[in-house]
Structures are given as structure tokens and as C-alpha cells.
Image (cartoon, rainbow, N blue to C red; front, side, top):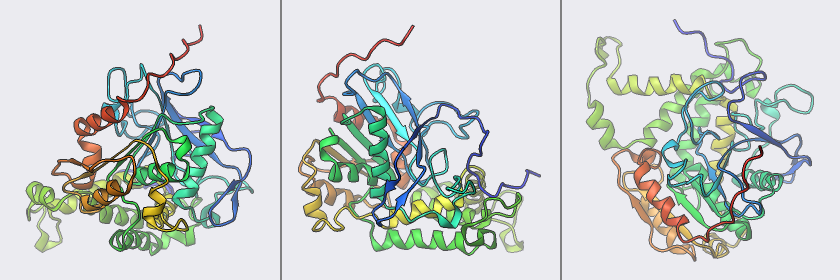
Length: 388
């Protein structure tokens, strides 16, 4: 039998860092709620070389259970391969001979950045004391990272799903620091349907006895909220894939060697169990709750006179794309977003049977969008040669 899952699936002190680096935010981070979060650090990875003036920097933002590892193999410090590996490297859409690609782990996450599993001011995990975060707070942290890296303005900000929410927030709140924008499979504001899906996932985690009110991080293996987190992942994964794909792959077939009439599983159940088991060993339940709450609260128009007025601030070149089979963030939301962004033309369509996950899977189509976004940008100044 496999070993019991740890109380938190996130990395622990002493684990291999992999390609990650860390930026420490010296001052307590001001949050939208009016509170301040002390001791913030962000994990990040980079590819390519930074131009002397930082003009070739591109910010790439990950989705809910992603991390900074956009490109590269799995290995020590990286439980999964790069989630957009086909897009990053010499001659690829994010050509590292030209661009300096930066990918942070989101604030509130669990792959190296400050989140609920991180030590709080007293040295014990934040747990239930970790504050509510908004997408705007996460972008505030990313702006502080840009300051640390000496990047006054990104040549482009690119993100899909939760990363697309943050990319959009960059364009609305900091248009002077956002040279161009690519938003994939994300809305201007979370809908009631999306909030509902997120809320039942949060409820699944909080109803697990192992949740312990959010203070489970020092529980023994097998006694954390892994059952609730696994159930949240099952629910989420249904929304990430299309009905057509699931039916064509699994239909109503039983898992080989099992009989549903006698307590066995259907093949689609086994598939969901597989994804649940993978996530609980690499992700923290507290981060899942924190990030899902931030996504539920996403609304670029909040306090800005509504969505249309807020998007009118983003006077910069923009591309918006959605997946034609996406039932979580339907294409109509991207069409509305594109219509309201001053620098965008009609929304582009990623054609895929895979539903929402198409923005991760259809790398040829996504790569073409990235190339289209970056092609008109002025050639940045040559990056300095590496030190001897």
C-alpha cells in the first residue's frame, strides 16, 4: 500500500528547491481588506536572460493547482512537469533567446510562496489565522516581486483560468506596467454558477474532520483533510473536462475487474479517484480554500464603477481567448470581455474536446496566440551575456 498522505501536500522546509528562487517582500503587504500580511515571500522561476532595462520581461501566471514550474521536467522539488513546457524555450512561442520569462507561485499557494501552510510570525503554520485574499492582493504581491526584480513594466502578462484573472487585474489596476495582455479561459467576474462550484469544493474540505478548523498542518500522516481535498478535486475535475470527452472516453463502463452493482466503480469514477489521489500528495488543502475563495471573489468592476468602466482603463494591446467546449468558463464570457477591452478585437476560440483544460492541452493553438501577441512588440535591447 502507498504511504499515508501528509497532513499537507505542499513542500516542507528542507525539501529540494528545484529551479525555484525566492523574493522576500520587506514591508508587510497591504491587503484589500485593510489588513497587512507580514513576512511575505514569493517563489518564482525564470527562463532566458533579462535585458539591462528589463524591457524583455514576460509574466506568466498559473491556474488554481499550478505553480511556478511552467517549463522543465518533473524531478526533485517539482512533482509534475512544466504545465506549458511546449511553449517555453529557444524558438518556441515564449522564445527564451528573446524574452525573459518570469513565473511566480501565487500568494496563498503552497509551492514555495507564503500561504496557510507557511510559518506565521510565531513560527507555527498560519493555518486558520491566514487572512482572506483577493485576486487584487495576489497582484499586489506580484507587483512587489516585479519591483524586487527591477522590472518597471512587463512586455506582456499572460495567464489562463485563475492566472487569467490575475492577468486581467494587472491590466486594469496597473495598465502602465502591463505592455500587452493575453487572457485565456477566464471571465471579468465570477458568475453565480462558478461561485457555486467553488463553494461546494470549499465545503467538501471544511466538512472533513481532518480539517480541524484549518489548523491541521502538524497532524500525523493520514489525519489531515486529504479526503475533503480529494473530493474537492473530483468535483473540480468534472468542470475542467467536457461532457463529450468524458462520455467518449468512459461511457457507462465499469472499471475492469469491478462491478458497480457490488460496490465497484465505473471507469469515470476511477479516473476521478486517480486525479484526487495525485493532488492530495502535492497540494495543501488550506491553499486550495484560500485560492478558491479568491477566485469566487474575482470581479474587476468591484469598487470601480462596474466591469465596463474598469476594463476601459486597460488601454493596451490585448488578446482574449476561450475554449469552445469549456463548461466552467464558457466562451461567451470571453466574448464579452473582448468586447469591453479597448485594445482587444473579437475573442479567439481554442477548438478542443477537452473542456476548460483545453487551455493547458492545446499548446499549438495557445502558442499561436502567444506569438501573435508578442510579434508586434518592439525588439527588446539585447540581454547581457552571462557572467564568466
